[in-house]
Length: 91
Image (cartoon, rainbow, N blue to C red; front, side):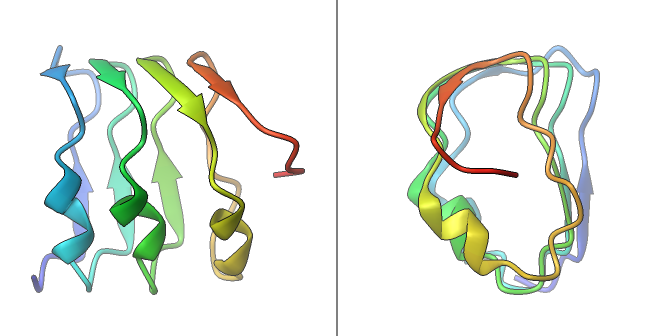
């Protein structure tokens, strides 16, 4: 729960993003880009309070982006591109 950075980019990680990732309350940087992740973004991901970097581009994620991502005023340009995500948000 005290981990502040998780950088797992370009590791060919397959599967779903674990739903319990939201329990990492101190996480400030999450980089899961350029992997083989699939499925929806778990709602717990949007609960990170201190997050300022959120990179999950170039995976196979599906579903919609929660509007709660706009509640993160410290978030600097999240990159969710090159997935199959939908949203009406302006990021």
